[in-house]
Length: 560
Image (tube, rainbow, N blue to C red; front, side, top):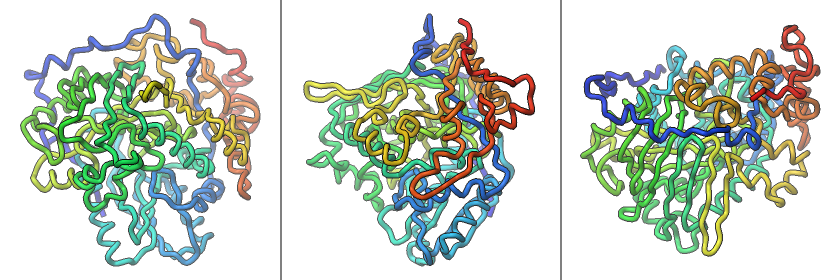
């Protein structure tokens, strides 16, 4: 099987330079700070890069994945049972080492498995503007997956299908669909996948309970986002436990069980459906990253949940403006007005140990999709609601369908209640991580200070490290991020000093825990993996590079 990506010619999305909108050059909303506002409170973090040379080194992480009770969310919860029939679907963009490790864990749990490998063609290298074309293709692909799962449901050839790492799945069916997010060894060998699912589920529930009971919400971010909306009673059932059954049926017909509530690991910070006449989301959304790669700084002006103007954005912005113009007069099913560009997503990640992969970034599936589920990161989505029946109906009508994103890495999410306000996220930290009940629960599995803290904070000049936001970062975010990741991977101690990073997981007990010690709970034992930490323990990279010798992270604050 070969999957071919959509090309620009399919939709003629490239803008004509002679007809570019004045908005293309509008950077009036670009933030500027005299001093990086988060330099002290949210310093950069970059975890160790562990060295994986054999599939067996990955098995302790997969032990935890295999044992987690099933749910249909974005955290890998395979719940393997002896004798069940399992389809593992991968493709040539997956590392052979991770495929081998998955095969070995399936064999250990004595399931009857089949591995299907799809040929997606050559692994592409991305730029941020590619998200527009890719998500036109991806929307069609996910619709095909939904059709495939429906056919497999009828045949009942498998009990479980493990594939993909994003988007909706069929819920409450005979066949259980679960995720296969392990693209590379770097992604799999992480505390994110050894984290006790009981703790992750508690974090999810803490977040959801505060969102569903809020009356209004405001989302801000130092890259320029400031948007508010009313969490109308009409979005909800009488108990505010689930989304309103009429709205759910209109948007998610045939998959209502999925659409009526949050997706584990991906908490819906605003309803993923539209009210026909009460949409009042107003403000601006701004950022420098989408699901595919860093992109030019882009600002969306939102009025009553409709995007009325797209400012700046470089080629990414040009393509989005072209889509907006092409669809301006089309009435999409369930949308409150004409046009494709409506804001419907503000989804919140909940796993503190997800991090941006470094090796081969950004290419294939080693892109920004995975990092969106780190705790406290919000990804804003606009366009058609992915894999909903409303989207599929629009596609059958011949309309252009797809949705696109901007990521917020340091957001503050404030809820308004009757006589009380509460932050759910502060500057990118999900406050569930500080909840006493969750910390007590987590203590059953080890040190809560290690489990309930983020492994990774991006280093953003002018935001959480020295530098000018525009000159050193936002005028070419992809160049900065690729450089940052290469230095982080190959010259880790030097990198930590350069950006004045927090070395919590790169020295001493924090490093030992991150490089394998995190697996040592619930009857699983794992060796400490070699990696590029800032101390001397197990650091092959440091030993091989004299320029990196010594404890570079000790007292090495970058000068102002």
